[in-house]
Length: 249
Image 1 (cartoon, rainbow, N blue to C red):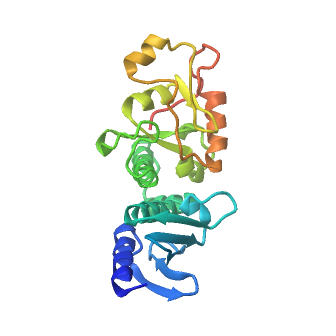
Image 2: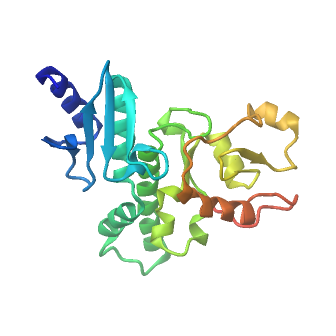
């Protein structure tokens, strides 16, 4: 690793959220942050390849049971580091901890006061989903952040705890028309990420909405599955009836 190469990686690290000075040990150049305890290490391979390892392999979207990935080029390095930092910042309990810290001491005696506290939680949830999904609709790749909606998979009112309400795996960042369909139970997703549409939606309606059967989400994780199962069982209009459990957040 030349001094120039190290400087470029350190800049990429700082740009992506690993703002502490890296250290060098047997793991490679170890990237750290004051925002979370997990680390990512970078080693240089041949011809512009980087080998990344992490305390949690799932932060790198590594295959199950693995803690290392290899990427080629600085653009891919940036992408991997951005995802790792986003995963670390939005890890479920950390989002709930932010919410509790921000709302500690706020009154909850009246309906208006409870709504204020709920709105704080919803804003934190939206910020976390924007971070986790890298500012793009997870189904269409729309990247106009102001238009994107933070959709709960298991609705806010149905959640059993703040941990569920603020769990990033209980949320999808969606374009407005996809959010409306998902929130209203007109569509849902399989555990593999494939879109499933209500029989009440005709092919003509889907065409008018610019939506096709090939729509899918590519970055679903195992932690999404229990929430998606709830959505399919309680929100999706699978039987031609009105959706049975939905709220708008």
